Image (cartoon, rainbow, N blue to C red; front, side, top):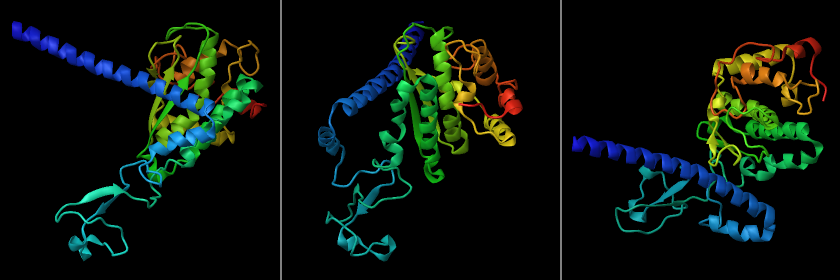
Amino acid sequence: MRNSRIRDLQEEQCRLNVDFERQLQQHAQADSRQLADMMRTKLPLELRELLYKYLYLEDAPIPVGSYHFTTYVPEPLRSEETNMTHDEPFILIPEGATRQDHSIERDENIVYPDSRLLDPATYLTFYDNLHDGEKKLVQSIFDALHDFSSHVRPAIASQLHVEFCMMTAYKEPVDEDGHNRDNRHHLNLLEALRVPVYMLKHDLGVDITIIHYDEHVSVFPRNVTAIFQLSEDKWSKEKQAYKAADISYSPSQYYVDIRGSTKPFALDDSIKILYSRWGLSSAFNKECKFSIRESEVWPIRQDLLRSGPMEE
């Protein structure tokens, strides 16, 4: 009896430790992102470069990935089997020993720190359009992320893990099943991510994580990856619907107008988008509540087929 109790306590301790580490990691990632954004916003370029140089071990940038090492062996150990030449760098070390160091040669299959994919200027320009209103902001987010997704090379896609971090500051406290104006704001934001996420996930095979952080929703960052539930077959069906209609996708086609206008969507139509297009009961759900099914808003808005692309 006593041994059973001890075993139960040990299992509970293990479970709590795992849960603590997971929540700590999520919270630390959000704090790190905030610090990085503050550095870029507040520090001039000259000071940032002074800090960035400590991220390198050599004069050349260190590649991101596991295939950027050159093995150095002493001269006596070189042979035809090693495919080494006298022109290659080497370090004289004790017989039989080897050493690995970073190579300065670039590998086209590696994402480097100065890659366009890692340049914040590539995908943060949508902030410039904030003053133009939410609809243009949503479109700008989509355009930037779509551009990012389009520049991922298939040769390295399966090696990548891409994390989307949505950091919001909605004014009204909400729970996961809440319905208010912010619920509709967030639905518009999800629509901006939809196509880029599925392009990376299904077309390229990238490992995807989507995190949402808003202290009015949860004190901890929430992993909402599960709401992007479309299977590869359903994603293919959605793409084919647009191709057959000869219409280019835009998040504005599903934009929910917060002001209650009937153009392009009345507020009540947000329920149709949530249920049928996303399988959600609220835009703040962490996982889907329903299966996505054919309707007037999926795989394509039916009124687009009748009237053609919606005017901006």
